[in-house]
Image 1 (cartoon, rainbow, N blue to C red):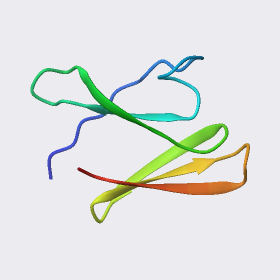
Image 2 (cartoon, rainbow, N blue to C red; image 1 turned 180 degrees about the vertical axis):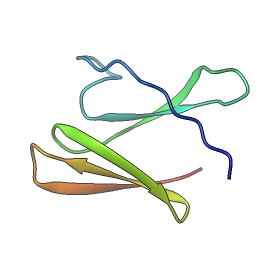
Image 3 (spheres, one colour; image 1 turned 60 degrees about the vertical axis):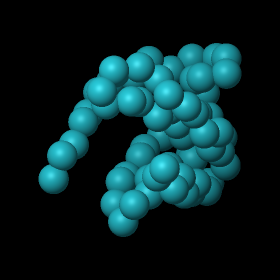
Length: 66
């Protein structure tokens, strides 16, 4: 399995709080973003999607790859 892990700085603005970013693995640049719930705290990958635990809203957001 190919995997990429990195620390990503969070903050306020269009990419930051409540956002999952897509990174182009060829260039290492941000290629898109998806808004999630309030105060995302953790992310898990599997079965073609990511699930984001939103601690501020007591919810889970599902982000489909692609």
